[in-house]
Length: 395
Ligand SMILES: *Cc1c(COP(=O)(O)O)cnc(C)c1O
Image 1: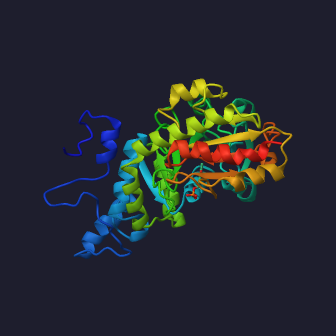
Image 2 (image 1 turned 180 degrees about the horizontal axis):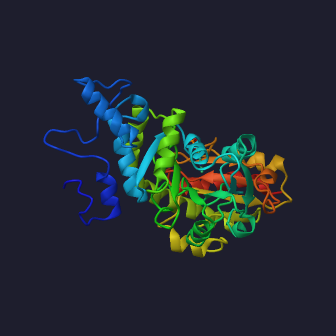
């Protein structure tokens, strides 16, 4: 089979073949092309490449702009997210920040979701105003965006689902609001990994993803990507060139390798998460679970409409009578869940969140919040592990 994307095959089949090409004797995986300098035979040849790069075209003129290895990954992400072009960045956060820098200037106003990843929230608070950009946090489900728009609003920046509490925003509706307001619409698509949700197809201008998480899938690489539509690509590309955004070819290679198994991994993560959520729902120490694939989740109907599946990340809220000491004891008692940040790897993780700090545009949860990443261990073992640890809530 060749890699002709016009061929009518399923998405999982495309995942195996996208972003690579084969000819007689070529390796299955693209090789790692390490380079700062690219060489040319003549001054004219070098000028030609530099001229095409100046026009915003992708060219191997200098290693900072990327390598052939990185270009393969960009191609795969563009196909996956139905974008126009993509730019790799050294981390997911660098991709998030590139979106703000590319679309805003002093005097503009932005609407930022209250549900964004913590460090993005920190960037908005500490860096936007300092650079003359005013902003407001909207509710993580996007329900109050219209009331926050100003004449100078140029960017609506969402994360869907919201960090930790996984609120679902109605993207097609917000896309028409953004269009009418003349604002760009960007979505952090990391929870769904670019695979289960397609913000650009639903009306967003920019999709940004931390490839550190599911795309790589093995907890050993930091990488991010901005996937842009035709209208926003020149803004993203220009700012990336101006600010020295770059990504390592070795990391791009690892993510390309991880991407091949994304479809099967996501199914297992979602299956394990659903089984854990179903178990937690029935426990007397749990006030609420937060998982969009669960029917009682507030955003479930929209999630069903817009997403092709669930991921492994969910949270539980303890009943308020359980204090922090018990919440800590529970997490410490888990044996198969590592205690750590990030997620999307093969391993299960648990993290005690600071519930009071999670939201400011809506009421934060009252009970302690524990965020779980359901990994690829045997689901029955994971269930047994949480059941054993939960003994600390008894008596
Ligand atoms: C982890 C994460 C990021 C940042 O990615 P890094 O690669 O760790 O910098 C951005 N957005 C979301 C939703 C994330 O979970």
